[in-house]
Length: 305
Image 1 (tube, helix red, strand yellow):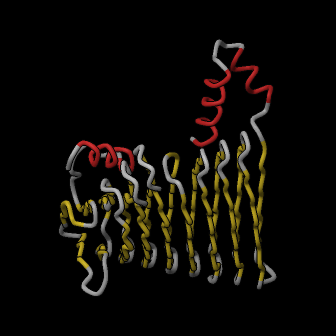
Image 2: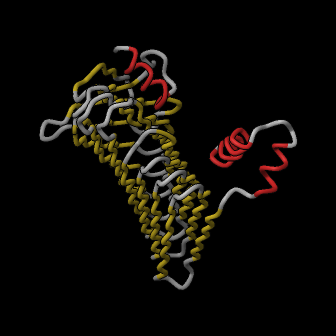
């Protein structure tokens, strides 16, 4: 990998070198390295672009890294990755995509990640998106995550997009069986004339299942954000979604929550708050010696932490 690709890898996966354990690194539409373990297999799809990640039942304390890097202007791709996690496994999956565009043509990565998580398995899924480059071509990224949780399964998802993506449509779909748990935490920041759309939809089908979806975002300059959430309570279940946004300059933020209860014992809650940085917060930090810009940055970093 060249220096640009190494920087992208560090930004989206905190990796300074090839990771230990199972991994598949994709760079400019081609494999840049892959490794499997005794418990984790990675198989290239034959019918379309992508891979299958197969994790054996009972696998504990192992991780999988599957970053995607685009450093050539004009590359546009669609990738399908499927994850099969066996019963009682407990693993961490680190994904994400970095796009460096220094040219005039648009660069685009669309990816669909589908999770089949077995009974009582637990997965921590970390996904980061990052863009760089001073070319006129846009950096476009459309991640879609589809989640199927069997009885007692748990998925903790952390998804972050802080810099450099001009346009994104972030889709998450999920269905939960009895006793399953879904935790989603999104962090998002847009600037310039960027556009970001977040769309969550979760079906709570099994008794005792729960979903907790939290989105925190900052919109600067003339950027625009849209947040949609839809929680369907079809059982004795609990669902919660929360959208908190800081709006700055001439940005626009829209939040559209929807809750549907199809069971008398479904407990569903949505919270949404959109507002500017409080003046007293700025003043307090500026009295400590920070400039207004430094105070704003401090507040934003704390909000998105």
